[in-house]
Length: 145
Image (tube, rainbow, N blue to C red; front, side, top):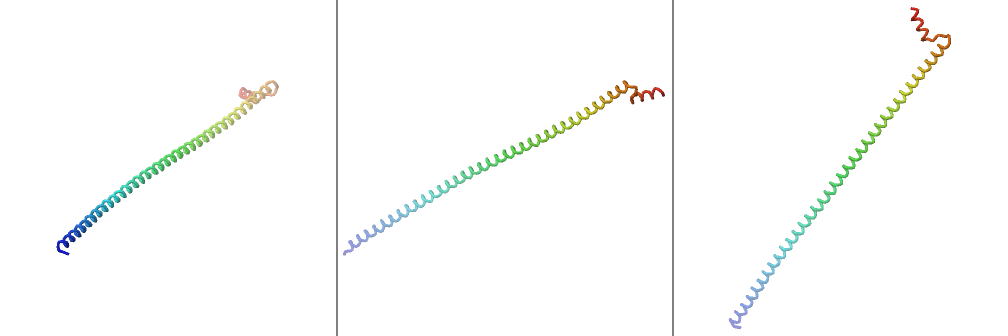
């Protein structure tokens, strides 16, 4: 082989090596771009998952808040009902006390009226008869003095 052939083969081999190096470099650049795209996609997915997690947490917080608000309303309603029941009991007791006092007063008045009527009846009986009544007797003593 001649030197020129050797040089040409060497040039061809060098070109092949350079082409292979360029090809490897292009492959490496493509691999880097794909890795960066994959990392970017993973970041985007992670951010989306984080956004969805925050949205879910916000929904849960809203539901919990709504639950406790309704619990407060129920507790207030229960307390109001208990207060109304206590007021009704107090009013019923007050009415019962008034009825009892009215009955006692009515009985007392009726007994006094019956007693007064009996005194009048006995006084008129005494006036009709010759037996002096206690009132007439008392008036007679006052007249003698």
